[in-house]
Amino acid sequence: MNIEALYNLYSQHYLVDTDTRNIRKNTIFFALKGANFNGNKFAEEALSKGALYCVVDEEKYKTSESIIVVDDVLKTLQELSNFHRKKLNIPIISLTGSNGKTTTKELINIVLKEKFITNATKGNLNNHIGVPLTLLSMTPKTEIGIVEMGANHHKEIAFLSTIAEPDYGYITNFGKAHLEGFGSVEGVIEAKSELYDFLISNHKKIFVNQYDPIQVEKTKNANVIFLENSISFVSASPNVNVRLNAINIQTNLIGKYNYNNIACAITIGKYFGISDEKIKKAIESYISENNRSQVLKIGSNDVVLDAYNANPTSMRAALESFDQQLSNGKNKVVILGDMFELGDTSNKEHQEIVDLSNSLSFQKVFLIGEHFYQTDIESNNLKFSNFENFKDYLIQYDINDSNILIKGSRGMALERTLNFLN
Image (cartoon, rainbow, N blue to C red; front, side, top):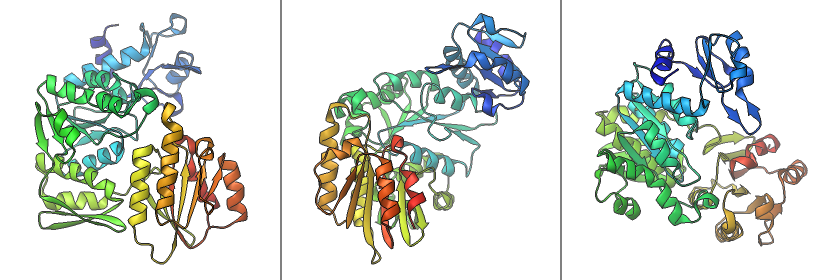
């Protein structure tokens, strides 16, 4: 079956699923394969749960006329999403960067929703599977699409750009993330700039933070839209407060590092004709979740939970921001988990974070994970080779009446700490 014929089936309901645990009625099930699973085996189950069609790439699983055999399910999913993107003929905004992608995407989405029917990447479905699924979740009713792109190797952003074919793009920043795959910060810049390369070669527009010299240099020959100069930073104690012209916007986000994320959303909102008042309403309504800079009250403790991801750049920004926040008379306690995918630089980067922590005004620093366990620490701080050992400590020694920052890579799952705080 060719893509156009498959698209005719898809366009009956504009539904696609890849997991039989969450099958929707009238969907098309794409039987993806992974290192430890073969989606082909679940084709009949998908049909029994309400799927209209299944796409497989092994002939032996074609047990029904509703099961379509292709050469490669993943490639077909990607081709279908690009075919659909062309049919939609709507503005697509893509963004990438080392830190802040998801928060920026959510802010852009909530602002544009004040005027348009939007569809944005769910969570962090931003890879070679997530981007196609994001595009295929859009319908003819969608007026603007917002597509987040992630990568840990070269050429990934370039490939995702050919699928999404964005009209606008934004790179949040270039930081020390996925160094194992990119090799160096220079490698990060080169890889993330693949989005710039696509937009420039296709004569599209780029939103640029004019205060980032790397972004300015990379886009000097591009059609750029600079961040609004009518936006100013007011304070971040504890929440970020910005001013848009004469309007004060008090956000629910913490950390001065979120200022650029907010400024980008405001700029894109104004570009698409959203009024200052509606931008204020939208941004003030946004509350971070999913372990991303969440502010929580746990017993007598005020907790900043930022345990979704971590790299040296975001870790440094979080520590410096936490240090600058008002203490309200409480101790400041930092709980840090290992940063992953740093390759040969791992020991150096973890030690630098420890040294930074020692130089700031924290009463206690807890370091968790094999990488942090190899670092040299000051006597008033503690390190644990794994979370279980840290948990045993927490059970025995309560942390009370403190401001607590919890940050680490996703694999550390430091949100588990909340279960042991009073």
